[in-house]
Image (cartoon, rainbow, N blue to C red; front, side, top):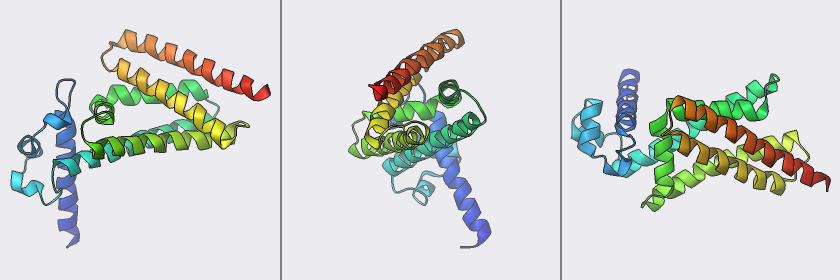
Length: 201
C-alpha cells in the first residue's frame, strides 16, 4: 500500500471513530448505535466500514482502548506538572475533571461499558482501569514508603472515588462541578492522610 493510500485509510478509520464518539450522548449509548448511522456521520458508504473494522463490537473495543490511552496520557501530564511543585491531589483532580468536562461522551462510554452486557467490553474497560490503577500504584511507591500491595490497595480506593465523582459531574452545572471537585479533593486528602498515618502505626 502506498504512503498516500495508507494515510487516507488511517484518516477514514479515525473519521469512523470520531463519528461514533460524536453520536454518543446522555441519551444515546454505544449499544444503540447502528453501523449505518456511524457510516453516514463519517461520510462513507456502510460497506466501506468493513475495510476498517470487522463489526461494531471491534469499533467499540477500539473506542474503549483509545479512551483509556487518552485518559492515562492526561494523568501522566498531570504528574509532570506535579513534579514542578504542583499539588498532587489538586492537579490530579483538576486534570481528571477537565477530561470529563471536555470529553463527556468518552467518559460515558467507559462508564456504561464497564457494566454493559458485552463480556468483551467489560473486560476491555476493566483492563483500562487496571492500567490506570497500576500507573498510580507505581507513582505512590515512588513517592512514599508503601509496599506494592499497600500502594495498589490505596490506588484502588483513589481511582474508585475519582471515577465516581466524574460520573456524578457529568450531569452537573459548572457551579455544582466546582463544589463536587472541592469535595473530591477533601475526600482524597482524608484517604491519603489516613493511609500515611497507618504506615506509622
